[in-house]
Image (cartoon, rainbow, N blue to C red; front, side):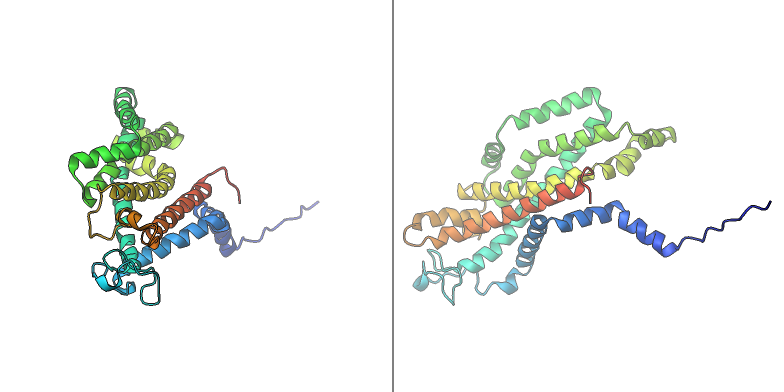
Amino acid sequence: MSQTEVVVPPADNLSIETTYTARSPWRMIVNRFKKNRRAMAGLWMVLVFLVVAIFAPWIAPHDPFEQNMQVMLESPSIHYFFGTDEFGRDIFSRVIYGAQISLMIGIVGVLISIVFGVALGTISGYFGGFVDSLVMRIMDIFMAFPSFLLALAIVSVLGPGMINVMIAIGIFSVPTFARISRSSVISIKNKEYIEAARAMGGTHLFIIWKHILPNSIAPIIVLSTMRIATAILTAAGLSFLGMGAQPPTPEWGAMLSTGREYLRTAPHVSTIPGLAIMFMVLAFNMLGDGLRDALDPKMKL
């Protein structure tokens, strides 16, 4: 009695590739992000601010430093979309150039935090023991101070100015990045592939660079986006107090501070920079929330 031979047709390579691509982790992350309307709105808002900041010299209709006393405190009009300030300067042009300053302070400050915070957190979590206790106790000391007060104290010591504001923002955000990075490293360092890398003779630096950091980057990305919003808000607060960007720099916090004297007669002088700060901070927070949901492995398509 002969057996019936069953011939299985070869799978289509294209369909296998398509299925693999559709189920790849990055494709799933992108799909989850696209389905989040709030996240997409935040992304588009951030892109608009970036485009405005990059092309500010071509978008701004006036010189942000040019004074015209004949039109000072003028209300919004066709010639001056957002009106003018107490020196007759175009607020619309100053807000556009202010986007450059706010984004630069936020991004550079957070980059400083990432470099030092992730390095300290990774070393602390990977080696543990005395190193872990020492680094975390130092981070606890920094975290005992409110963030804004710590930044204010640092700027008071270093002196006012945008560079010192970036340094202050970078310092007060280091403990947060260190703790997040440490938690991620502790959850990863005892995985099977890490043990395999050790068994194959991999050095600590190789394991950290090739295996630990790539697999602990997701929470760092989310935190970075949200900390940019915090950095922008902190920089505006410091400038409002006169410790950040100095006049006549078109920084939103400084514009808000000078405009408070004209709230009754010309409310647009302070209202418009305040709205710019609000929308930029909102955009980065919405983007950060969307990234957190998209990168969360517990979320399903």
